[in-house]
Length: 255
Image (cartoon, rainbow, N blue to C red):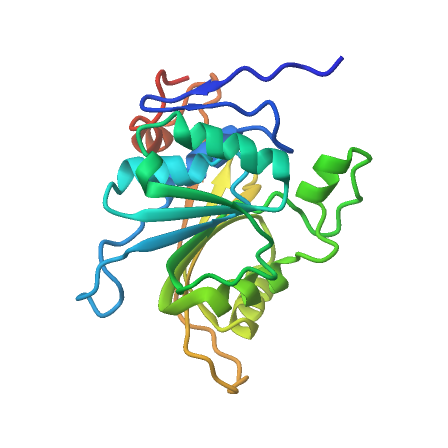
């Protein structure tokens, strides 16, 4: 018998996640709380309007960001029909129903009416991982067709120039990451490493990048970018002060 997933209660909304391919995780919550969407675009005169969440799952990121940014509109897309249905229900049951739209769509063939100002993504896949025997988890986690390179290329097509991209991804070699971003015509702005505790190595990284104009120039470029490391938990299991800083706006109670 499969384990029943209890709803995940936040301060202003509740996430049901019993029908989705992958449940809500503390890493996803930390990611959502750390996404720092700017008030305006690069030219400092045009405000952000619309944000896309790729692989929305439960709708968690859309809901967290809608709480932080009441004047923005969000679209969450996913290829898993049951996840889309549950994300839509989570949105309907939240105070942010008028800010969020949920669609069944594949990022590789997604054609919005207008480009997005920012894209966020917690891709539930890890490259080089063996496929899961469970079909829904296999769809969600395996990257036969949607690897990081294809994801970046698809995002670039539907982002405005100088648009923002935020991705949570397993730790990889920074040189490879820079090369992959450059090929897809993104500039790396900041790399935040996330580790479970101070005694463990970082296992995830928050990639913040900016889309560049389309060009045929393939010459190597290694611009300066910020780096930092965030520790999620203390050794006693409680949140670190830095994690508390981000999550206290959302969590009903802090571990």
